[in-house]
Structures are given as C-alpha cells and as structure tokens.
Length: 452
Image 1 (spheres, rainbow, N blue to C red):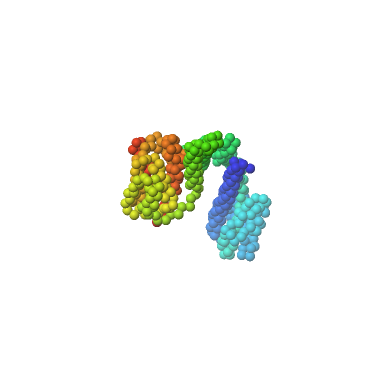
Image 2 (spheres, rainbow, N blue to C red; image 1 turned 90 degrees about the vertical axis):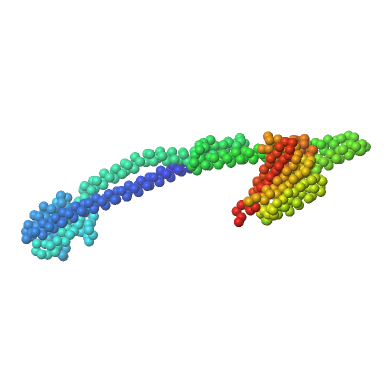
C-alpha cells in the first residue's frame, strides 16, 4: 500500500472513530439528561400529590385524588411497610403491577414495559390513617424514546454527511504530504537513469519540514555535483600533469635509443631531464596523496605548541638548503592549542611557495592577538593578479604555467595548505600586488573550539 493511501485510510478511519465516539457520548449524555428531566418532573408531581394527600382526613377520597395526579402514560401505587399494595391507579393496563416490581432504593429506576422504556420513582408519605407508606409513580418514556430515535438518525446522518469532506480532506492531505516525496523519487530516478544531478522544483520559500526537505535535497545534489566536477577536474588535471613529465622521459629515452650513448652531452641532458621530471612526478604524487588524506577525517592531536620555536624549526632547514634570506619577526610567547605536525606542514608549504616565486628576502612574522595568533609570510616576488586571487586555493590552479613548471610547482601546495587550515580551525587569507609581492596570513586560534 502506498504512503498516500495509508495517510488517506488512516486519517479517514481516525476521524470516523472520533465522530462515532463523539456521537455515542452525545447520545448517552442526551439520554441521561432526558431521564433526569423526566425524573424531576415526576418528582415534582409526587411532591404535589404528597401535599394534597396530607390534607385528606380519610382515605376514601384518596383514590379520586390519585386518579387526578396519575400521568397520562403512567401509574401510581401506594404500598405499605409490608410491600402490600393499598391503592393502584394506572393509565396503562398492567403498569401498576409493573411499578411495584421496578422500584429500587435508587432515586429512580429505568425499566422496560412492553418494549417501551419507563421511569419509576418512590417517596415516603403519611397516609390519612397516620401510617407511613410509599408513593410509587411510573412514567412511560414514550416521548423520550421518540426523541432518542430522532437524535440517532440525526447523528447517523451528520456522520455520513461529515465523512464526505473528511474523505476529500484526507485525500488532499495525502497528496500534500506525498507530493514532495514523489518529486524526490522522480528526481532520484532521473538522476540514476541519466547520470545527472536532477534537482526538485518546488516552493523555495516554504518554512515547513517538506519545503526544508526539498531544499536539503537540492543542496545535497548540488554538493554531489560539485564534488563530482571537482573529482573529474582533479583526475583530468592529474592526468595532464603526469602526462607531461612522462612525455619528456619518453622523448629522451627514444633519443638515447636512436643516438645511443656515444654523445656524452646528449646522455647528460637526457639523464638530467629524466631525473628532474622524475623528482617532479614524485613531488606531485606525494602532494596528491597528502591532498587525498586531507579530505579524510583527520585525527588531529591538539596540544600546546610554541609557534616561535615551530617557525624557527621550519625556517632553519630552508635557509641551509636554498641559501635564502628568511627573517623571523616574533613577539610574545605565541602559545596555541593546535596540532604541531600539521601546522609545521602548513608553514613549510607557505614558505616554500614564497621561495619558489620570489628572489629577494622572505619575512615570516608572528603577532599574538587576543584570541588567536597571526602568522604572516611575506615575499617580494612578481605577485598575483587580482583576477587569479579567488582561485588561488583551487587544486592544480596556476597563475603562470610556464613559471610554475620552471620552479617545480604543481598547483597543489596552497590547496593542501587551505585544507590543513580548515581542519585546524584556522583562517587563511592572501593579499598580493603584481610586481610588489604576496602576503599570506594564517590566524590560528589560541584555544580550539569547545575547550576551556
């Protein structure tokens, strides 16, 4: 059974049960109220009769008086203390005897006489002889039964009439609830069959859960599409980047095959090119593996780290290896709660990137602020055009392909740096002016989020 049918059936059945229960309550409440009304009327008549009987001097006129007070569809009996009938006046044959049998100790009793419901009551009175007797009165509830029959038919009719809009509204409710789900199923089927990322079309400004589900599904599909495009672009770029050094290696290998090893200059040139391109491939593969790891859930180990010591440990080997002037400007202790291993990798990427694309000195500074520590890497290289800054952290993005190839750049370093910064809860910004250089800032929180 489909969800729409379940909602339709359940809501209709639920409303039907509620209506039936309400009708039953109304029916029995009305019946009880009718009985109470009849009882009050019968009790009032009994009191009037009691007053009239108390004025009698003898019991000779009692029969005439009782006949004056007997209900149109009822009976009156006078019973002594031994339950012996003294007088029995009845408007319906046999009702007097029935009255004697129906009386109980309750305020009134409900019985049935010849298929008709009856109500009986009893009150003590003083008989003209001075004896305490019981006045018993019975009233057939003919009018009440007629009213109850009418009420029953009215309630049944109202229930049947009310079920029409209930059925229609339950169908509408089922449609409203299942329509977004049907759209979702349709979009998923289209996406599965066509290989695309189909989105749902609906009320984008809705505030209910169904509209929220539509928006979340569309956002999820958009994110999946973006991830797929990034993956596709990553594979394409990686293939292209790996193809270039492989082509160079293949070309020099063929050159050696054709010309042999007699020409020493050719051999040296070929071996140098093979070693260079192999190193470049190795670096690229390492960076791609690092980038793949950064996309996984990293198990960061947050401890207290002295950024001054950490920065000095990164700068020192770079100075020795490349003979570059790298200056450190540090203020304060710069103690932060972070993962020292990843921060060290982040700083190495930024400093190595500054080394590759500048020839003058590099300045690495640390500025301790109220809630975080600002680490700045500044170079005086060629700079980056403004149009390229929004894409500088994209994978394989290069400002100048020829310049990157000469410096050994792969276009992955800053992407890895951005992934690390995001994982550590740090903020990475970049400013650059063509011809003047580039400034990259990392804002590392002193305390990780959620720690005291």
